Image (cartoon, rainbow, N blue to C red; front, side):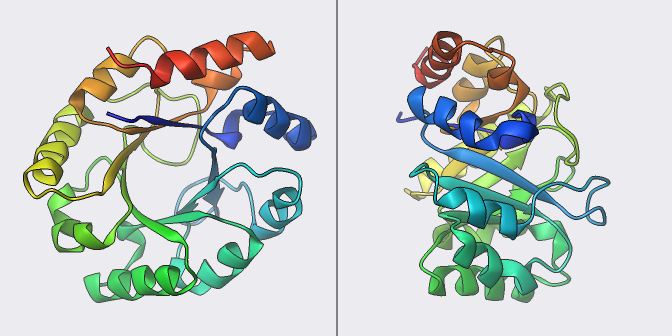
Length: 223
C-alpha cells in the first residue's frame, strides 16, 4: 500500500515557515498539512488563506488544507485560489448533508481534490453515500483544535471498518489519519488501514534534516 506522509505545519516553527517548508521538501515528504482554525468551530485560531497564498510561491509541495471552521462553503474559493491542492472540510460544520454535497461540488469545480473530516464521535457511515466522490476521508484520532495530543486508541476500529468498506467497494478514497501519530504507533495506524498520515510534533520534534528525513521514511515504510 502506497502511504503518503504530510507533516502538519501546526507544529512547525511559526517564525520561520519558509525554512520549515524547505526542510520538509528536502526530507521528501509527500506534502504539508495546514490546519485552518477559526476560534469558533474549534477553540483555537491558526492560519488563514493569505498565509497559504504568500507561502505557496516558495515551494512546490502539495498543500493539504484542513478547514476546521464554521461555514466552510463560504471559504472554498479563497483557499483554492490561495494555492490549496486538496481541501478537507468537516461534516460537523454542515447543517445538512445536502450542504456537504454542495461543498464537494464547489471544490471539484475549482479543480482541487476534496476530503471530508470526521471528529472522533462521528461515525464514518454518516458520509457513506459521499465516499465515491471523495479523494480522502480524514479520520481525526484526537479532538480537533490543538496539536500534541495523544492518539485515541478506540479510533483504530473506526479506521478498520472504513478500510473494509473502501476495499470491498473498490473505492479509490484514501483514508487519512490525523492526531497523535508518532514513530511509536505509526505501524498500528497503518495496519488498521490508513494510507495517508498527518503528523505534527511526531515529525517536527526532530530538529536535524537527517532525523526528519529518517522519520518520514520510517512512517512511509511498510511493516
